[in-house]
Length: 151
Image (cartoon, rainbow, N blue to C red):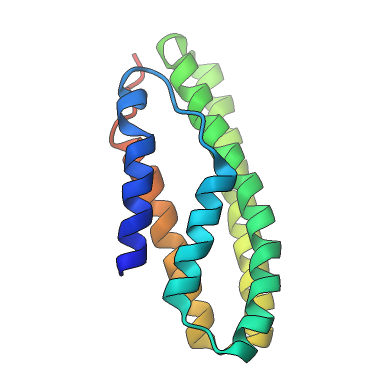
């Protein structure tokens, strides 16, 4: 998927060196999501009728997804800042926060899959959510590969 490769290159340029240096870069989330939208448009190849239904739903989902993305990014920044003096108590609290973020993401995804499925063919819904998952996995794998370990 040519579109996925483009966003992964964009993401790779944003993250690894600064994570290695002990910081997580400030990410222009709006620019990242604008690039992602262009990739989705290219990859989905929607008919005019499908597009009329898809894009308003996409906009709704992206607002929620952007908020979750910001929470995940802040959680990673917090990890990088606090990893060296992390107590078991603090680690347990951070794990609870992480699971809350992930539960919110999954709940959001389930709700949006239902909304998309009410208006679009299952094949298109599946294609979109698989692509979402791959883009997200690519981004966070780049950060994860370079995250410093807890000492």
